[in-house]
Length: 109
Image (cartoon, rainbow, N blue to C red; front, side, top):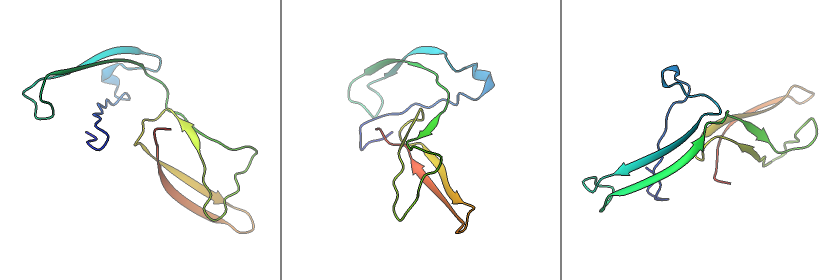
């Protein structure tokens, strides 16, 4: 539950084989919550559809190398949900080697 943005996320581990969920599967789902639940005053229903897609992360840059200096910002696109954390590592094995592991959080846009 994300009370700040008034959103509820329902998550399902699509990698568990017993669920039989595969990339390309399409679903239509309905979520209902009754008035006896403390999260709402009146019963509510939400319906949506979605397609299961492969996890993908792409960085926005041109060329073979990303130049990292001081506070470099690197953007990209992903199929991961907003709020997902990913590990990103910048490194160079050249004349001045470095290794900078960071954690990034996927945002809405």
